[in-house]
Length: 458
Image (cartoon, rainbow, N blue to C red; front, side, top):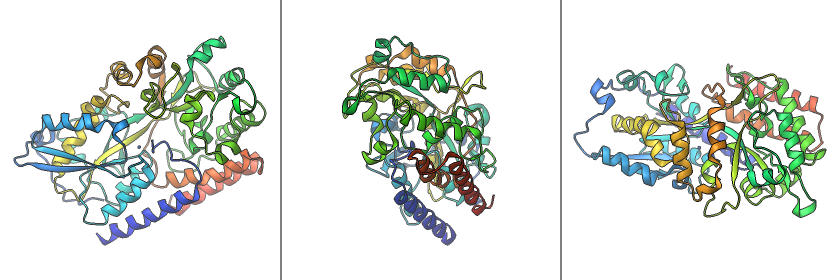
């Protein structure tokens, strides 16, 4: 326990330092060695365990009810399993995944109750690696074939510590009314060159009232957009955990961003994004930008929210493909749900995890599922139907995009993946602000990533 306490506190401190060193907004996740003596459940208990006594579980997550719809989901679980009560433990009132993970680390090192834990994409393997989670292999083996049930592999060091819950994919959302005005069809088969061309054609006006053709945010994800269009090795790290900084697409993508910002002037200049702290939702929904590459949590929001109503119809297009590819790929960025190693009710906690990551998540009708048996069209209709104003969502283009986008490979991110992403930000910014050449930028990015990989024993 002392080892876990030490590692947890170090990890929390590292996250705090990373948060203080970055001027960017929350990452898309903000928006998401246990004891070898773990019990071997019987086949019956692995499928539908019968708890003789009332059990109260804590569900620790950063995801607020507006997105996750816990107020709909939890009661349905408790109806099916009346002996299990689930209490929501919201780790961040603002839905900030980084702050939530810092709080979780402190809870793990204290006497706080932990049972069910949900993790953002890049934070799962870190916690599994230091023993915060119970291995689930024994439960799974008694009930089903994991690889037939779920779309991504969640193994860390050969063991499954969590099941994938929501399955984030990327695409491009666009103001269909502006496209119609400009005589441009919703793209169904396009490249990044086409994306740049569309952005130029959709840009109108000058000054404060200027309408940009697109908006590219200051998240690290935008620095690797074209990498994300690959079928594999589609992040700053290769699948083996080594640096992907020398992939030519990283250089091409940064050059594309700079060209669109300062030559084509079809997207907001980078200094405006950081100095004015531009919000991507405001830029899009207020009509300041026509197109926005973004994750699929924006499907439900395209129907408007209490904070930002939808005043136009949003259409969807696949993430642009590479010139060398025949298909449209998207990175797959799941959230993960597991059982705390310190839980006193592991079997009941696993029951919720299994139920939620299969049938339960779809009850919320807000996000897409990592369950292989999920009905994509039905889920689209559910998500759209639950939106504030379904008439503002172009269902036909959404269904097409979901069907014609191939998920790229999604190995569990290395424990140092978030550190790598943060290390890229200052170097990419120097290039975009014309303070460093592209070749020097790529060299420094690769060196920084390689150093982090080396420091982590890879």
